Amino acid sequence: MEGTAKNESLTSYVKRLLVDVVHENPILVGVSFGGIIIQEMSKFIQVRKLVVVSSVLSEKEFPKRMVLAQKLKLYRLFPTALFSNFDALQYFMVSKNLRKRLELYKTYLFMNDKKYLDWAIATILNWKTDLHLNNTQVIRIHGENDEVFPLKYINTNHCYVIPKATHAMIVYKYKWFNKNLPLILNPTKL
Image (cartoon, rainbow, N blue to C red):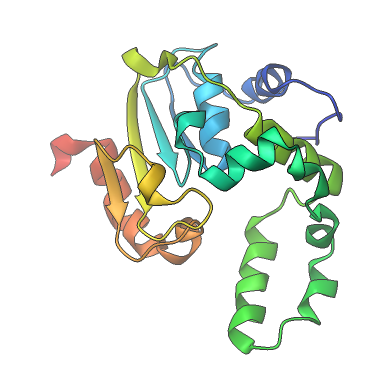
């Protein structure tokens, strides 16, 4: 999917993404910003389930620093250009562990265009939801040590909390996801 225009609305972006959803009544899985995207998608199509991983269900779950960044528009100062050039960032990584982690991010953070990242951060911080999910089955999976959306702000009712997991748990806790996600999606197979 192409990036987005600077002032494209979230609704417009979501409708462009929906062109690729070919199944009826799908199960949508979204990680981080993708969790917000799938919630917005469910406003336009019937979904069987939403699996929201490392994300929020409402702007009410944003940590205080995000609320402040939104109010003061501090997100405009975020150095997203750094993420456009992972190779240059590697020179600043002193430890082997950090270089290895950067390689993983490079692999999985495929949308690293500065224009897209600027738009996505502003869109996340300015997102408001109407809590339309009442009739949709939502499965939440969240890391105990999520540094982007800290657990203390998350409504953990009906939430699978993964011990010691961070915001990037989809990468580092893949064995947990491989084992448990099929069972969570189809509990009759338990």
